Image 1 (cartoon, rainbow, N blue to C red):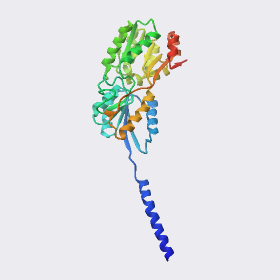
Image 2 (cartoon, rainbow, N blue to C red):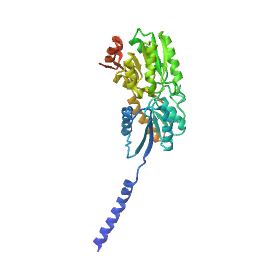
Image 3 (cartoon, helix red, strand yellow):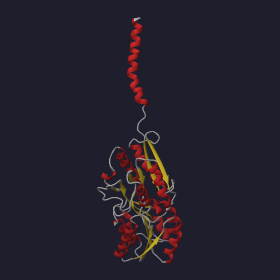
Length: 330
């Protein structure tokens, strides 16, 4: 009998020890819900979405386990952005990740309380999104691939160096997002400093690109600077194909244009930025206020040249320019 009692007692004690552990194992952990909204189609944005997802994974967030990501894409239609932003706000997500000034503007109009992380932005202070890079204030933080408008002058300088005879340069501009007027003024100033005539050609969507490039041809421009804007980035193949069709040397803000046939690009690495955006999400989910998190200027600038495209366009690139490039596509 004593042996039976001792056995029951030991089994009881074992159960007491195991029970809390089993309860803890069954207790569900915190599951975060975040939003992700872009102008592009999922395919056009795939490498940036992957970079962001990889960044989250490195920080311990696994979709389906402790994370739900509500992804929304406008399929190139900017007019859909306010609707998509409002949908994420109704879902009460804890953070919304964006990329590009039109997207940031749409989300900002939908909420002043949900934290917004910019995966990419252009002159966010000048666009009125934040108070300063060091102390953004409000509910917006993240990264910028153009902290100020000095980058615009760099585009014109590189284009003039690549095409020294260029006397008339076009600026392909989307005039609708915040900061577009400042961008135009910076381009006008850069063109004046270089002694070239500037032709501003506006395009608000994909259906206006063909007419925009035809207008450049009529005006007999020698080259084109393409504004850093998600409208052009998401339809980059169309933009690059039109530049080639009209035999216009072009400079872009992202290497993705050059990888598919654009002449050259100078700007922040967008996949690097979206990976870094995950770190901002992590800090916010852990309690940091977005207004206290300094906006980061991209630490990685890519200068990429497509030499094959230069040959197609009949452009002889100076050797010094080629030597300065981070990558030359042959």
